[in-house]
Amino acid sequence: MGFVTLRRPVVTIPLCAVALLLAGSCSRRPEPRNVIFLLVDTLRADHLGIYGYSRPTSPGLDALARRSLFFPNTRSQASCTFPSVNSILTSRTPAAFFGQPDQRIGIPDRIPTLAGILKAHGYYTAAVSASPIVRRSPGRYNPHGGFDRGFDSFLDDCVWKPAECVNHEAWEQLVAAHGRPFLLYLHYIDPHGPYAPPESYHRRFATGHPDKVFIRAGNSNPIADFLYKGAPDPGVTAADVQFLIDLYDDEIGHLDSQITALLHELARSGQLADTLIVVAADHGEEFLEHHQLNHCRDVFDTEVKVPLVLQIPGVDARRIDQPVQNLDIVPTLLDYLEIATPESSFDGRSLRPLIEGRGEPGALQYSLAVSYRSVSDGHYKLIHDLADGSFALYDLQADPGETRDVLPRERRAFHRLLPALTTWLARTEGRASANESVQMAQEEMQKLRSVGYLE
Image (cartoon, rainbow, N blue to C red; front, side):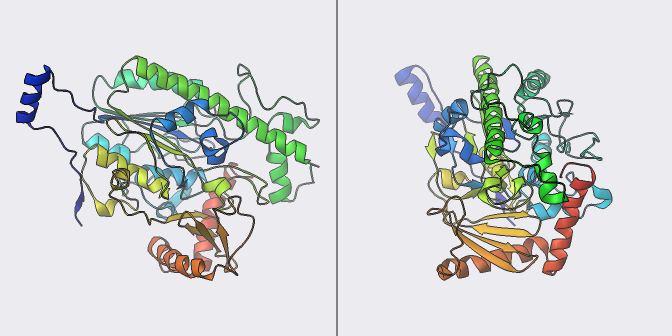
């Protein structure tokens, strides 16, 4: 295959000389040299103000999106941290990480990573992760680690700690770069359950005092135990679920304040002039909208529609409504950094042509969770349950909550999306039968259950 590389236009020496004579200087638009990748665990898109949410949960992120490239129609490829983050950091579909030996869930040596590619090009690559899954060292929920491939430094002692811990260690990593171009990957855990904003943070939304102690603590596990383990009914009310949502929104508000503070300090210190910033999420969160709880359970937009913001030096702010995927992040970064990579290395595409008005708008978005597989064109989403062979089709524009199956009356959309989904399944999961695919997905879920990550 060919190589993906696009050269940005530069001012030639003669033109620059003319500019110097006329103006006494030769100014150029800033160009990206560094990357700061902010990955927020469990951040669903529709709980941010920039998506029209009624609560002011995210003034800082909203402002960043307005002065950056904002992709409001982005979907994750999985509704669980593993394998979603694996997919994000490699631009490979989630199925590429299934079936690893010895219950491993990290990134195998055979798959190139963003960090490894940049390190090979002289970058200092560093990560700070609060995730119990995305780890370098073994931990309770990830017994083997394995997410540190390509990183010069990978700090994971902020596990389960709020954003202040991640930000503090981020500064130490920037100092360690010693002036080299750098990749800084920061993985925040704040919106992930249990929903418990720090005591120092003034709550704006969760201001009540529910009777149930576990609800006050933001612990949804008793509900999950009832739904998935046959535990006694905890007697949860609609008000209880709303309080969990209130806490979740306060978690987002706290995170927003911390990311805003970090970016402010980076700008004040002069670190951002030539730095490309990414804000993304691995998946969303379900609050019983589709009779599920938390995440890792389905492919509705509550779990797979995620925010994506790119701030690229020299590129004007713009809202891009065409459908894109988390798979597209790594190829886009490398394209703007002018690092050539074989096309066959990635399952995603560079968004640079789309950003510059030269791209094809008809891309599709694919997601998976347990036995569910989905494809969306941004207007319709087709969901296939491999376990029972059923299909459901949703009109995302008329019914963004995905509450009405329109398959019986929208047969054209169904027959347009079905071949794409079938082809994707054959390409990413091989020629295995549906039962084999379901069994493999269930085994991956069992890995997380066995270590207590999933209820």
